[in-house]
Image (cartoon, rainbow, N blue to C red; front, side):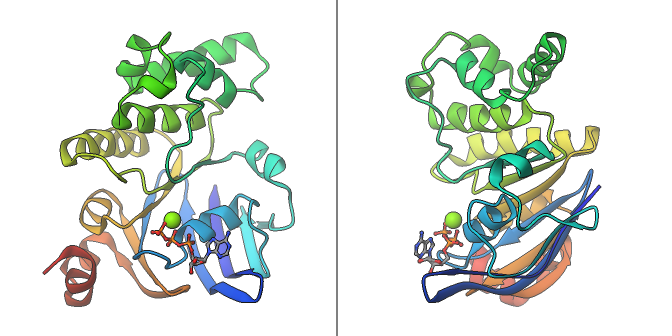
Length: 236
Ligand SMILES: Nc1ncnc2c1ncn2[C@@H]1O[C@H](COP(=O)(O)OP(=O)(O)OP(=O)(O)O)[C@@H](O)[C@H]1O
Ligand SMILES: [Mg+2]
């Protein structure tokens, strides 16, 4: 499977936020998109999911343009987004949140299988099954948001700043799990992050997004050594 965007443009009113960006992700691969506040990272993911309409360009899933499809159809095609700020349902339990993620999984056995998979990935979610999601720690809520997206067995997972607001050790443990997931499955991950150091340390390739344009594209290890990337995104 391959997910690609080509010359993707998006606007809010008459302000263009994406000026024609191109990037791609294969199944079993993790690519990072790094960029500072307002660069257009969330807009790019929202465009891929159909939440923000593209004003130009294409979103290609295995070569087929899906940029005019509505969000629920894109979700059903196997593209799952974990939005910025997690957005779990705070008054529902952990298990109920996972059930919401699986709303298109009608088969009971398949549901049980996915739940087992998510619980194996994040044992903490199994322990906290009956607890309200709103009472979880920030890190646990991020695990729940990712777990919820994985309940549908997506082909591509779009992660919007999973590190936001979390302590470095928590970020590290979540990113270790994500890295394992990519190594052990066919899922492709587009990881959007302001935390360039950690994103590039687990991704295989990376893109730098600046003011709605991709300005650099390279293997992640190369970007980590790039002087401009270091100065702008890693702090020296
Ligand atoms: N709903 C909206 N209405 C109008 N402008 C918007 C909207 N959402 C985003 N923008 C603008 O589009 C640009 C890109 O925003 P976007 O949220 O995609 O950036 P980002 O890279 O995700 O930033 P952050 O790291 O802060 O999350 C910004 O200039 C922002 O102000
Ligand atoms: Mg954002």
